[in-house]
Length: 154
Image (cartoon, rainbow, N blue to C red):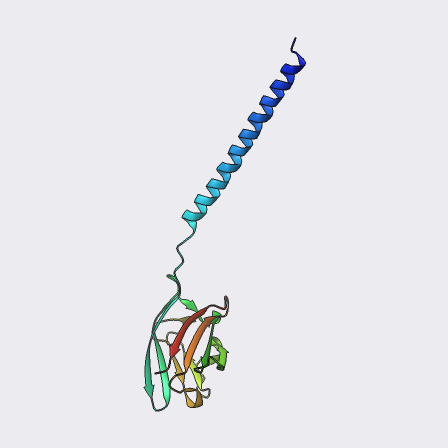
């Protein structure tokens, strides 16, 4: 016959083994999630926008020579542009898609390959009273609000 103290001892051992087993499972799951997340998360590469500036007759043409976010092109529908002066006061702001081929505006955008992406060969034209040396064309993500590029007029 098993005594009362032996029953309690067996119960305590069972609870201890169960607690250790549950702890092991939880720690194993957490380690799996942590290391699996590290391996599957791609290395983030900041957006890259390269350009050349052509100044002529009180106009600035900014031609894009490269534009990528990691390996992907930048979607025009998620870009905003603005012209700011030296004190960072915004003079003109638009979603990029509103500037397409607008020859009457003092800020226009031309998507040379009509692919809907900011890519090599695309260009901005800045004219009139906002095309002044020392001002900046600012490009940002309308999706995240992140500033992608400041391009000073020289």
